[in-house]
Image (cartoon, rainbow, N blue to C red):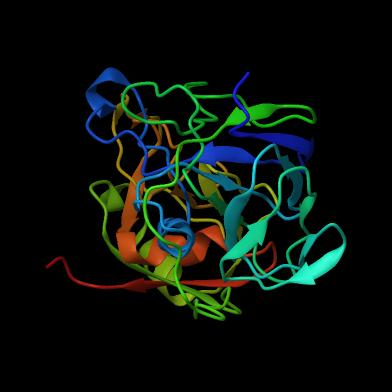
Length: 289
């Protein structure tokens, strides 16, 4: 086996391989997938000299522990967390040289949800439909990492950045999501439509890569029954029978039968990826451009 590889010592709660995802396959029922906090993934790639679309690791809350079989440059970004090499603290959000056989520990998030680990050369698992991303809904791509998993690495291309710390947005203390009116807003009472953009919600612990779930005022329907399945998009806010909005994230289904009351602007979704359970959420109505 090649020595350009990375062994997983501790996989953490959920660590997956992610890149920019699989655009253009929705007609086949294949979600976009890819890093939920795409700007954070692109930044750590830039810090280690990788192209922006190189595959990185996305951790969830508890981080992960890795042991490279060769000397590599790594950078950890996204949710702030402690980072150590063989027990010695090293900078977060900066390129760090890790010797062959050393133990890189990406600790639990101090705030936020998802940290991103870029390794010089990128994670070189086999691509599926042009992407190395793990898709939790369809099962495409590599499975979530387990202890003992060995990941192949590519050859380093560019030079790593010369910075002490790269500035990144802090995880949101309050999440404001701009929404345009959805195609099925008329399925809800006028009072429910007003409540959707005027009342406060909170991020639910049931959120995942498929959707951001919230707790708060239930949205009452004006029509009974269900829709035939129809296409859905990234950021669509679907409302199931319990009346609680669900914001579709990267691994969302490409069709759905629950009415879509609104659609969140794509630039607001990276912050949604970092909102911890209990974070206040406000949906702010905006006009279509």
